[in-house]
Image 1 (cartoon, each protein chain N blue to C red):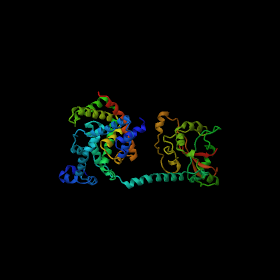
Image 2 (tube, one colour):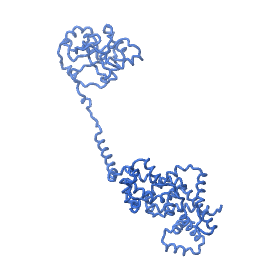
Image 3 (cartoon, rainbow over the protein chains, first blue to last red):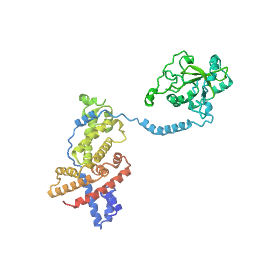
Image 4 (cartoon, chains in turn green, purple):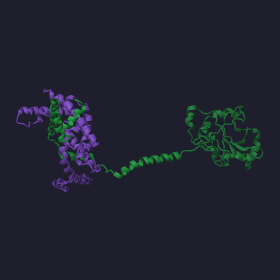
Length: 286
Length: 207
C-alpha cells in the first residue's frame, strides 16, 4: 500500500476525519477486500489501545511525595516575566552599544608621541649606562678624567645654568634608558664595569655597601654623605644575593657616578660624583 | 516557607472543601503556601500521571518513581507555572520529560529485563468476556500491543499514549510536546504508522 493511502486509512480508522468521509471511503472501496480488511485491522488496533488504559494500582501515597518535597528543598523563585522579556530585547542592544563605545575609545595614531613625554625636572639625576664603546673607552656617555679632578672639586658650590644644560635636561627621556631591566643588569654585572673603569681611574677597594641604585624599581637614588643629603649610605634590599649565589661572588662593586645638574664653572660641564669612592674627580663627557 | 504547613497539619483546610476548587485556584493557594491545596491536586492527578508514566516505562516501580518525582518537581516549580496551560497538561509535560530522561538512562537495559517487564504484565490481563477463548485472544493482542508499544522509540510512544490511550486533545498534546497543533497531528500520524508496522508481525505469529 502506498504511503499516502496508508496514512489516509489510518486517519479514517482512527476517526480523525468526519463520519461522512469515512462512509464515503467505505462506499468507494466496497469491492476492495484487502483495503477493507486493512481498515478493520487498524480500527481494531485503535480499540486495543484503549485496553491498555488498565494499569496496576500504584503503591504510592502522598506521604512519600511529601518526604521528597521536604528533602528536595524550597520552591523555585518566581520568574519575573516582564524582566525576562525585556532582557531579551535589551541584551543585544546593550552589546551593540558596548561595541560602539569600544570602537570609539580605540586609541588613534599620534605622530608626535615623543613630544608628549613630560620633560624631566632640572634636579633629575642621571646614572649613565656603562656600555662598552667602539673605541675601547668606558661608557659612551661618561668618562672619568683625573686631569679635571681639581677643577671639578672647586666648582661644587656653583649654580647651574647654561643653555646647553637646560636643553639637555629638557630633552625627553628615552624609554630604553629608564627601563628597570636595563638598570638591574648594570648592577648585577660588575665585570663589565670592572673591565673598563680601571683603565682610567686607579683601582680603590670597594665599600661593603650595596650600590646606591634601587634595583627594585630601577630608579637611581643617591644616598649617603657624599651626595649632600646627610644620610649615611644604607644597603637597599634587592634580589641580588639570590642571583649572586648562582653567579658566584662579584669581584668588585660597580662604579656608580651621579651627575649633578649643576655646571662646573671651570669646565662648563656637569659636576659629577663617583659614589663608592666619594670622589668628585669625574667629568662628564668624552 | 510553604513547607511549614506540611508539619502543622492542624492548620490545613479540609481536603474536601479544597477538592471542589478549580485547578487554578488550588495552584494559587499552593503557591501561597497552602500545602493542602497541593495535596488535593496530587489526589486529583495522581492516577493520570501514574498511568501515563506506566505506559511510557512499562514498569510499575519506574512509573511510581516517576510519578512521585513529577509531583515533587511540580511543587518546586509552582511559581514558574503559568496559568495559560492547564495544570494537568503542565504535569504531564513534566512526566513526559522525566520518562524521556529515564528512557535515555535505561537504554542499556538488557533485552532480558525488558522481557521480564513485559511478562510481568501477564498476570494483570483480566478477561472481560465470558468466553475463555476470546479472553485468551484478547490477552494475546494486549500483550502484543504492549510489546509493540515498548519497542517504539520514546517520541512515538509518547504521542500514542497521549492521543490513543489517554485520549488527549491535539491542543493539549501540542502543549505537552512543546510544538504546534499541526506538528502534534503529524507526530501522531507517524507514530501510528510505526506502531501498525510493529504490531502486524506480532499479531500474525500466534506463538
